[in-house]
Amino acid sequence: MSDLKVFRLGADGQDVELRSSTVALEVQLQRRVEASMEAMLGIRFLASEYPTGPWHRGRVDSLGLDENGVPVVIEFKKGNDSGVVSQAVSYLTWLKSSRHEFEALVREKLGAEVAESVDWRAPRALCIAAGFSHHDRVAVGDLGRVWPIGLVRYRVFDGGLLSLQLVEPVSAAVSTAAVRRSNATVVPPAAEASELPVLGEAPECLRDLYGELDEALTASGEVEVVPLRHYIAYRRLQNVASVIFRPSPSHRAILLYLRLDPDTVELEEGFTRDMRGIGHLGTGDLEVRIASAADLEKAVPLTRRAVEAA
View 1 (cartoon, rainbow, N blue to C red):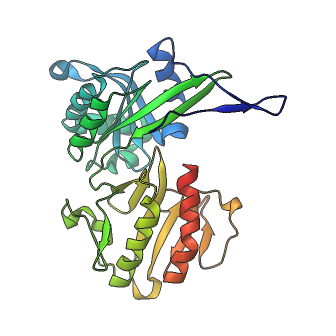
View 2 (view 1 turned 90 degrees about the horizontal axis):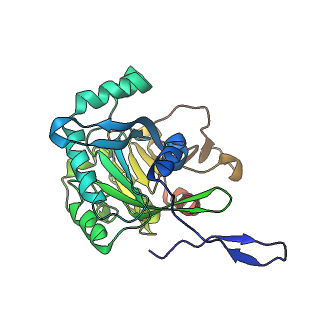
């Protein structure tokens, strides 16, 4: 991925590139992200410098629970540090062996209902640093399904600007390339079919539509597919979309929830709906109902907008 370039329009009407830098102290970056973690990363902050006990002998920089109910460990490095990936793996092993402790923390911070809905199928880690080596990227790609780790590059700019750029996405239970349309059926080639339980008893017509929808959502190559208990999430740093199946004959459709402002969309009864203030599975304020190829054709431009805005 190429370096991020940021420009400011000057008084003379010419763009001037802003020079980026790194933080002087690692804790400055950590505290800033922790203070706005949900807005920046879609992760609810739980704890800072959390001790991992005598065996793992460390402290997790930050612990959180993402918008899909998945546990997350976050490690910060002010510069480039090749040890951050191995450190993240170590903390993920601790996390997977400390479910009751983590759920007790969630219960304390977010309540019993949230603690009971923690999804342990794909706990993940995010490493936020000034940069990563080629070997970091290779290691993260190879760790894949066993140790899901995302690499996020940060930069600070004059005027208090902070950028967070996803360098290498987390490898979830099914990668962006893994969920594909084959013979009108969604098939995860390197995974068990049970990893997409939300497909359930979805009829072939919905599976066919979903194959096309999946291709539209993942066309950029920068969106990962995260199968969850009740929906399939499409994520960059935060969820871009959530997909839910409604297979009953009277309401047969795919419900697509997009991270788009409904005020920027011309709503169409029976096709799009403003979900602000209305509870639903998944995340996203715009609901798109897809029951036919014609619906899918209208939905594709909206998916592109959501991905581009993420």
